[in-house]
Structure formats: structure tokens, C-alpha cells
Image (tube, rainbow, N blue to C red; front, side, top):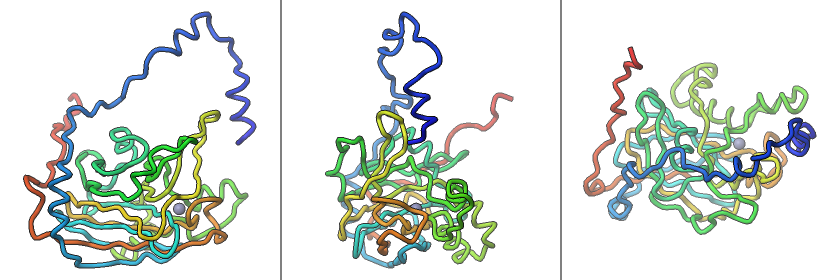
Length: 292
Ligand SMILES: [Zn+2]
């Protein structure tokens, strides 16, 4: 905890007004009520998945990244194998015109995702790119520290923040660099071009939260064990990139080679029948005139 932050909270410079308690006790309002957001028909997705056949597999090596393709209507499973390992996921539309929008996904579904939640795409499309249909860690819920699994609050470990906080330290296997190398290798882009496509991630299997006293982002050892998985349905043609974070289970530190790291497995499944009633999602209906 930084001294500056602690001071900011414990010794405010301005006296509380007489009605401070009243001001603080107004009830919170959910920013984005989702009563008008159509809920996915999980039973239909799961019925389609039950008849699906495995058509591909990618192993993401420890402290490295790899890309995979999933067509609209197909499924993919991300699994822990060999040991507890956290992954950082990027998703793009297959033509790279849309990318996963972690911040808006968080605003719509909350800080951690599980079955029934969706990966929303960037503006101007803002549509579901993918839907989580099964999560073997959904038993975890929220722990006494306020931690939960599979977050959309962390950004991705990266060499720039590492250099900033370690007096110029250079480390090349942060998730940001792993995703950059993987995308460059997959598409033929230069590293510089690929880097501009890498975006805030879905932290699969990572256990995170905010400390109640200082509001700081924390991580703790992931509860994931080999065999744990998440099943995801591709709503549109997708290019994915997954990094096996150098933090391993993220119980101590990342941005170094000190943690035990393990591979992650991505499997692709094609269904004989699409989910009942499913249609590829339309792009946002906003007319983009912006008031002019
Ligand atoms: Zn990482």
C-alpha cells in the first residue's frame, strides 16, 4: 500500500459537512440496469454444445501466447492443465474490425464473469462477440476478502508498467508482449502493428478484487486446478489470443520468471445444430449522427 494513498484516505484535508452521514447513506443505483438486456438461452446453447465435435486444439505454452480461430456458431473451451495457471484473453472479430471491450463488459455484467455473461465488442458495434455457457469455477462466488474469479478489472501485465515501477526493469514475457508476439506471428503484422491491436483482457481463472480500506486492486492464488474449464460460444467469427501469464496462479508476483507457470489448453468444437433460435447478433442500432 502506498503511503500517499493511505494518507489520502485516513487524513482528509477537508472537514466533513454536518450532513455527511445523510449524504453517504443514499442507496446505490445500478449504473446499467440489465432488465432490457436479453438474457442468453443457456439451455439452448448447452444443448447445441452437447452434440458438438472437437475440431481443433491449441496449447498455450507457459509465459507465452498463442492465437486460435473460432467461427460464429462454434464453441471453445479454455482449460487448466498440469497446474494452476491464469490466462489473459483477447478477442477480435476475424477481420480485426471489432475488439473485446473489457470496460463496457464490466459495466454491464460486473467485475467478474461467469455463465450467461457475454464479451461485448468495441464501438460502434457494441454487440456480443461471445457468450459464456459453462464455468467449472462458478462455485467460488465471492470470498471473504471480496475476491472472485475471472475478472474484467485488470488490464494485463505489461512491460511498460513494469519499467515504471521497477526503475526501468526490462521483462519480455508479460501478457501484453505474449499477446503481441502471438498476434504478429498469426497475422504477419509487425510487432509494432500487432501491439496496437492488443487490448484490455479477460483474466480467465484469475482471483482478484479491491481492498476495502484502500480500494487497491489485489490478486490472490487462483483456485483453479487442472481440469477446470470455461466453455464459450462464438457469436461472431473470432480471432482469439491467449497468454499464459508469467504470474502462474498469481499468488505472488508477475512480470518475472519467479512463479511456477503451466500451459493452458484451448479446444474448438463445431456443433451439428446451432443453438435453438440463435441468430448472429446485429451491430448497435445507434445511427452515429452524434447530434449533428
Ligand atoms: Zn499476465
